[in-house]
Amino acid sequence: MSTIKAPSTTGYRRETRLVHAGTLRSQYGETSDAIFLTQGFVYASAEECEARFTGDDPGFQYSRFSNPTVSAFEQRMVEFEGAEAARATATGMAAVTAAMLAPLRAGDHVVASKAMFGSCRYIVEDLLPRYGIESTLVDGLDLDQWQKAMRPNTKTCFLESPTNPTLDVLDISAIAEIAHAGGARLVVDNVFATPLWQSPLELGADVVVYSATKHIDGQGRCLGGVVLSSQAFIEEHIQVFLRQTGPSLSPFNAWVLLKGLETLAIRVRQQTDSAAKIADALAQHPKISRLIYPGRADHPQAATVKKQMHGGSTLVGFEVRGDKAGAFRFLNALKLVKISNNLGDARSLVTHPATTTHQRLKPEVRAELGISEGFIRYSAGLEHPDDLIEDLHAALAQA
Ligand SMILES: Cc1ncc(COP(=O)(O)O)c(C=O)c1O
Image (cartoon, rainbow, N blue to C red):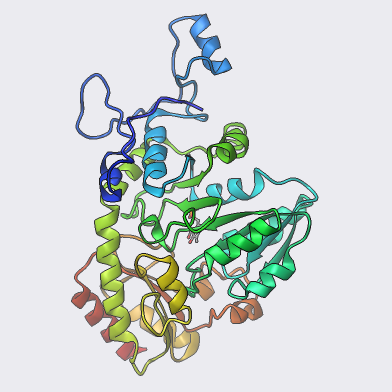
């Protein structure tokens, strides 16, 4: 792994690190980060080339292994998250796959919360068992279930919090304690919380993964992901896995994500304020039978939200009366808010999880997870909250 690093910004506050961490200026002294859009690197001599490959020379070799722009993004994430090391990936799913698969081998066992993004559930439930890695899915809110599921060969516990899409908030420090007592690591998918509002490593998690496609880009432009952990975990497991299997982040996308990080704090704060206003405006609406917002006093895990999150959420979950037909009438009547399966964008986006992100699950599994046919996931954008509330109210009138 390249060891060329920009000067540390860890003496500064987090917002400052989002703007400056990782910036390594070229000889031209450019203001913004440069893009090193190159597959590889050339060497002054065969000896220098050999030294790069032995690791005696810390320079770059090939952009599948590492790249200056990708390294800058990794360093900015490391200093913002407070991790020791990170590796960026082509997508969020590449980050989840690497964090789960790279350190495991046949005969190992995984315990995971059953409420998670459909593709993450596929990794745990379908992919890992094909290679002899057994998994147990538990109700992530029930600590007894975590405890009972642990086996002598349990190596990884995995959760996301708040969960996608029903916004349950799992007790990360309590689950980390159970994992560690059983000799396992805890991997947390922190996408819904964002790195601004929740720091899983401080709560005892060992590995944090992000889909950078969401709030880190924040403007719906490119896919990306990142795995953050200790230096040892990244070097021993993730670096080798990515280098040899190849889901590396493009330098161009790393540059877009670097730009996204510069504005992450102001965007996420504004989107969270907006989501909170929208949640309050919709909570008592007669066409809505259930509303979930981490940050409202009526959230089922309000005490855990207070304990482990520094802010609410940019997402609101609610159930429109009238099942799928009611939900579809509502979605089709929206003018400003766009129908999508993404989240964390500058534009407000709505998703119908039962027919999109969680469509792969059997109806009874969706029902068990609270993903009803009327359930909507709303991701607040940067529009004026009053325009959004008017659009949502007008569409609910037609639901
Ligand atoms: C919680 C969660 N994890 C991982 C991912 C995967 O991210 P990507 O689409 O960047 O592969 C998503 C995408 O929706 C997600 O919501």
